[in-house]
Image (cartoon, rainbow, N blue to C red; front, top):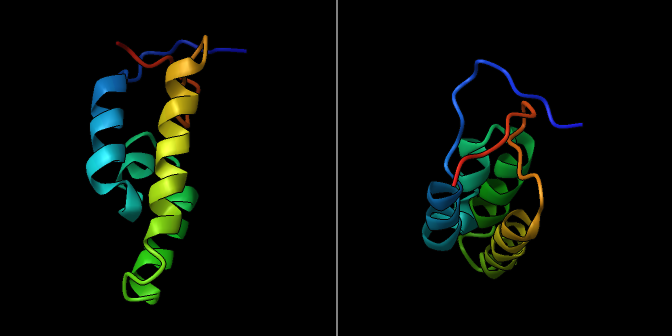
Amino acid sequence: MVMQSHMMQKSKMAYLLLGIFVGWLGVHNFYIGHTSRGLAQLLISVLTIGILAFIPAIWAIIECIMLFTSQYPVDANGVLMRD
């Protein structure tokens, strides 16, 4: 179920740009409130000194594709994201 609340809607375009440029650090997930995902991506990149940064980068691209193909893209609070 998609919930609408008085919380501020996040931008899908901002999410996409963050995912493309700094997705390997998980910034796009922090942006929409998925802190555990963002932290996992950040730790993989930092703790491996960037050697395995391609893993969260691919992960970020997949998340961006999933969000843009979703009929009801929502953030961590269930708020529908704006175009």
